[in-house]
Length: 228
Ligand code: APR
Image 1 (cartoon, rainbow, N blue to C red):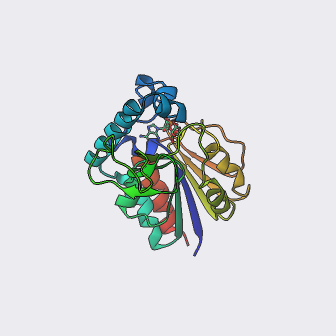
Image 2 (cartoon, rainbow, N blue to C red):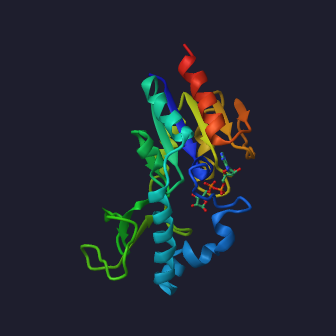
Image 3 (cartoon, protein in one colour):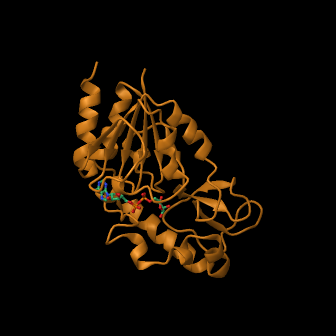
């Protein structure tokens, strides 16, 4: 079976009603990254940080996967598919994708604030202040903040280097190390880029699809499912 590796960003979930980060009406517009998505912010004002992610989780519970998430899951009928997502939502899993690497964590789980390896499922939308891990430390969202290590980057890079086909969807490629992953994909491997604003990449064999995810992803998937 040929191996398809897909790297997704906030744009794939935009049409599910979840805001991207850097579009004009994006999430960061209302927030300073430094106030809500760094270890320093958590040290300074944990209630604010907790509330920010509780709100994100509440929106996510009301959201549904869209045609792009479902189309990617349908590729599994014919290919070995690995999704690498920068998103902290669980919409790929809910659409049926089986192999999902969350580079930046997933908001439906909580995490010990002293040991990032200790993570737990969350019942409902809220982590309350006072809820602790097994070591007695406050629980926080299981997400990777700016300035924290990205433990899944090495397995993700290994997947990219083994891809037979690569698909990039809905990411501005503004944040490293995720943005560097495309450099691990061999130059001769076909790379589809689906985004109304195609990001600049230094690689070859690029097919640009300047469409929204719910239009562009099903188009590419249909082509790949029809291929020999
Ligand atoms: N379909 C496809 N792409 C879209 C759509 C859509 N309907 N709407 C917007 N986009 C594209 C934008 O053109 C942009 O290129 O999605 C991209 C969103 O970019 P960002 O907001 O920068 O999101 P992302 O690339 O996922 O951010 C990376 O940055 O803030 C951190 O940790 C956060 O994981 C996030 C990382």
